[in-house]
Length: 322
Image (cartoon, rainbow, N blue to C red):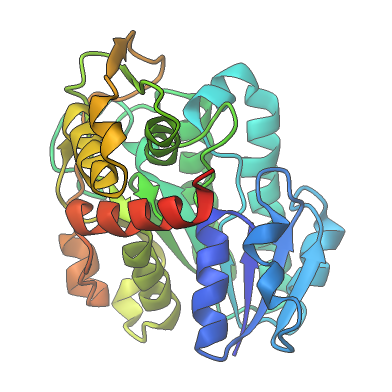
């Protein structure tokens, strides 16, 4: 089987590439390296089952080239980050909406068997209910959230109109190895880890009571594989929460990180935590119901936040300690 992984040099994409190459799939990576990194995938360059196409999903020719002979698409390419989308809504829309549409068109024309794509928990917007259930969403709270909801609408149209099998995975705060701790829009876990490792105080936005369903990368890999391979016709042309199904406050998260890092470097115990203002566009609480994924796909996440943090901290300490 041949898989195209868009955004394959990014955090989630590079983990998917490694996993599927180890299972002896043929894997094509399409990436323009705007947020991904060559060092995430360079150890595969000599693998005959791996092909890198340096290109941009905003360019339909690149998309068309990338899907040649491909059985499945795992579409991870996107410009993430709520703050980035608030600062630059036009580029976020170009990549996440126009680029997504290009990939759908190219996949349809290449007669790809199934198109599995990264959706987002940001689609729940201002809906108050917890846990979040797939068919109850609110109004989006950021340009990024709008783009990810539009992805779902386009995928549904392509399923209904053109018969392209699609499955959307609404990722909830994914973390783990290879997640970039640098840059203005770094995710909270790698950013906090790097600050602790450098003996700098991490800044929590708000009072620390905002909560998230933090989801370790291996749970996300499992969901992608299940979505790609399921033979259950009832399970396709829909969206699934991709999460662990538990929530952790930011204060709890920071203490968990500090505790695990202090086992590796006792000086980290002395680092203080700082609280700052709430961030624009952030939802207060996020918690996924994973019942639909369990029922339709047989999803059984193996890593809790505690297990995932231990794995992630060890990886960062080993790979990024100065």
